[in-house]
Length: 39
Image (cartoon, rainbow, N blue to C red; front, top):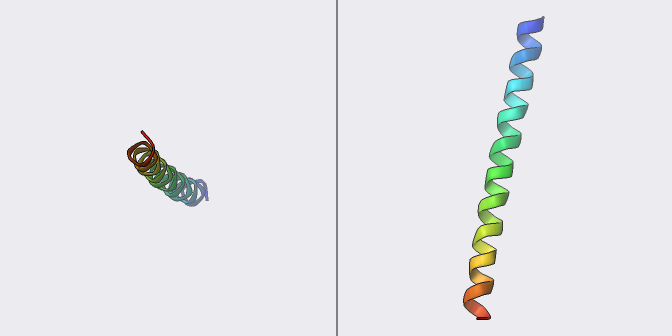
């Protein structure tokens, strides 16, 4: 029971971190594009 809940929490946590990392990478790319367009 505890192990199953722990694995579910771990899966959702890793998914959330991957999503945050992806969002951060997209934001960084947009920031670089904006800097290139408008110096």
